[in-house]
Each structure stands twice: as C-alpha cells, then as structure tokens.
Amino acid sequence: MDMLLLGIDLGTSAVKVSVLDAESRRCVASAHYPETEVELIAPRPGWAEQSPEGWWEHVQQAVLKCHATGSYHPEDIGAIGISYQMHGLVLVDKDQNVLRNAIIWCDGRAVAIGERAFAGLGEHFCLSHLLNSPGNFTATKLAWVREHEPERYDRIDKLLLPGDFIAMKLTGVVGTTVSALSEGIFWDFREHSLSHDVMQYLGLDDRFIPTLQPLFSEHGRVSEPVAARLGLKAGIPVAYKAGDQLNNAFSLNVLEPGEVAATAGTSGVIYGVSDALQYDPGSRINSFAHVNHTQESPRIGVLLCINGAGIFNRWVRNLAGAQHSYESLNQAAAAVAPGADGLRMLPFGNGAERMLGNRIVGAHCHRLDFNMHGTGHLVRAAQEGIAFAFRYGLDIMRAGGMRPSVIRAGRANLFRSPVFAQAFVDATGVPVELHDTDGAAGAALGAGVGCGLYAGPAAAFSGRAPLALIEPKAGAIYEALYQEWKTLLALQLQNIHMAGASGPDTLNT
Image 1 (cartoon, rainbow, N blue to C red):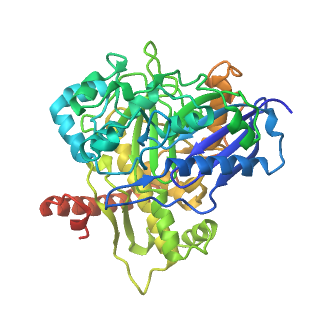
Image 2: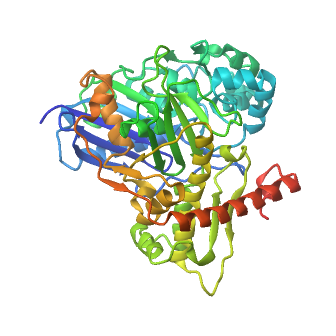
Image 3: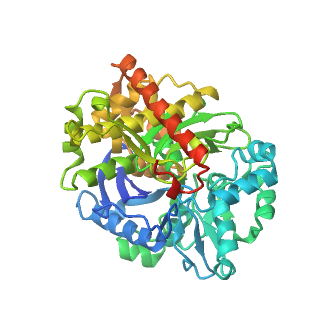
C-alpha cells in the first residue's frame, strides 16, 4: 500500500480519526471515541470546560480503535494532521503539565472583559486591525484567568489552542500558527504580528505565546514513547494543524475568494473566503486567517457561527429517548409536513450567540400542542429552527457582500438528515453540494500538503467529485415559515431588552 496519512479531528463531543491512502485520497479506515458524546463541564451557568488530558486520552483511544480495524498497517502512516475545536484556552507550565480545565469555545464568562476591551482599544482599531472585537475569544479568556485565578496565572509557561496541545502531546514540541493566533484575537492583520496592543491592554505576557510555525509545515515529530504506545513509526511529522471550521472549509476545497462551506455539528457554521481584510461593523461574524492566508495573498475566512445547532438536535434526541437512533428520528421528522404543524423552535440554548450581539437568548419552544405534536414534530421543528438560524446568519453575510451561488458541505452530522439538508436549502435559497468528507479526512489531506506530498492545498483534491447537489424545492413555503420564525426571534430579543437581562436566569420568558 502507498503512504498513509492520519487525520485527527478533536471535536467537542468526540474525537474522530481517519486514515487515508495518500495517492487515491480514499479513506482506508476511520473511528471515533468515545462511543457516547462527551459532556461539557459547567461549573456555573454560561461556563463550559473540558479536560485537555481527557482529549489526549480520547485521541489515543481513537487511533488505537482505527488500527484495530485491520484495514492497514500502522507503520505505513507517514504524516499526521490535526483539526481542533476553535477558541479554547489550554494553559501549561514549564513541564508541559496542564494547569486547569480548558475554557472552551462556547464558554461565556469573558464576555464582559471583551466588551471593555472593545471600548478601551477602540472599535475602529479592533475591527480594522484584529478584524473582530476581542469578544469572548481566547485572549479574553486568558484575561479572565489573570483576574480571577492569579496564582494559576503566575504558573503559566505557554497558552495553547486545543490543536497546539494535541501536537505537543504527540511530539513534545510547543508551537502555534498565525491562524491559531487570529482565532484567539491575538493577531494584528495590519502589522502582521502579534498584537501588542491587545496583550498590553489585557495585561497579558508575550512570553506565553508559543513559537510561530507555518500552518502547512512540520509541527514536531512523534516522540518514541508516543509512537510505541500508538503503534506508529517514531519521527513521523505532525504536518498540519487548523481550527475545525477552517479545516472543514479546506476539506471541501474552499480556498479561494467567493467560495463558501457549511457545517452543522455541535455548532453550525457558514464559512466563506475573501481576499480583503474584511470585518462586520457589528462584529456578528468573525474573520480569521484561512489555512492558505499569507501577508502577500490574503485569504480571510469569514465565519458565521451558531452555537446551538447539532447540540440542540442531540438534546431533542435525549428528550425523546436516547434509545432512538438519529436515523429513526430523521425518518419520524420526514413524516411531518414542513412547518411541523405550527411548532416553532429557537435553537439558541448553548451560550452567548455572537450573531445576536453576544446575548444569551436561550432555546425556546413556541405553540407546543400536547394533543397534536409528537416526536417527529419535535425533531422537525428543531431542525427547521436550526436551518432558520443559518438563514438569519447568511443574511448578515450577504449584507457584507458574501453572496454564494452554491454552498459546499460534507455529508456528516446534521447534513445526514434529508429533512435538515432540504430545509437548509429551501430556507437559504442556495443549493448545497454534498461531499464525502469530514474533518478527520481534511486533516489527513492537510498533512499531505504539509509534508510536501501534494504540491499545494488545491492539489490535495485532484479528481474529487461531489456526491450530490441539493436544490430548492419549497422555497416559497420556507420563506413564509422563516419570516414567522424571525418575528418570534425578534419578540424574544425584545423581551430580553425590556427585562434588562444580563444572565440566563432572567431569560426564561
């Protein structure tokens, strides 16, 4: 067999690993771990943490589980790529020991710090130099640790994004990328350097920032102890490291200006590429350095995130009874007509929603009728609510000039549901091109680019064709349903404003 590439996708709910044949790009084997979805640690309402050492254990188990398929020889693996949940904060001491649980992407504790920094640094400066407000990203999470856990802060040697941490565990090398720093809101795009203004304003120490490495490059080599534990050859490179949404776009060959990808995992994302240093004046969408960004040829990933997507679908499944498979629930939803017989749902129950002004809106169920609505209605209404949230966000992106004629998505997560996929297309009015790929496969291909096996990012996708094209069928029906849903959302936002709400305890109206 030809050289193999190993891709690791560190998600919020599980780790997935895929092994690809480098020449054919065919997936030889894949596995995920654990079998049940990982729960978040929530010490307080609005907080969300996970154990980095738990991630590392899951990565190891997923790799060994993939090996156990017997579909390949592990010693044929020649390079490793990593995709990871974005915006998380991992802190390690000088001995590479973890100092606390990771504060992950959907944690809302640093919102107020970000708002102060936005005002203190100046909105124009933040948007023109950082392409974002400091918001609730990695930099402000670190500032929260400095303010509230000073003894722990004093022990920090390096701050890491989740993918930096997994690469460190594999290789012993501590490093990061421009893309990672941009997602943490540490990067100044105008100066093309670490933002000393952000670091100074938040009182952070520059020495915490690891060595910068190109995204497609060697990020260290697998150490002998790790290689022995995982059945790999010692010394193979970790050759790619990217945040999950950037990697998802890469896995769909979304690399050039105007190309757009979508994903609907725990969170939902629409991700487009621009060649301008683009930002949203309302800071409802985010702009980061894409995988192929350079100072000379800017490639900015414009990201719209909906925190409450697949996690809402999972919540409905748990409510209906976890003994039901997602497939059976999707079939029940398909038996219900569009509109779910009047049942409407707002899917915003997973922390502060950036596209809604960083407000904690909560999830809401409207017009539930005990005599009419059953499991299929709940599932359909939830999936339609998620699709409408995508439409709401896409309209923000359209106002900024991003007008896709087609959106690419992997046939994974919610896009496995025919109800959701068609509702997404009908609600947005944009056809979806489905591809047989996922984050782990994308990370494996990225490793092929990073180790020099492929001539460049685009070359990794030579000869690949889409699985299907989903086109609008019931656009008029879904336009009316969306406008009704949008009115309900506006009323909910008005209720929050009138109540002067500042936390989740006052939002259950």
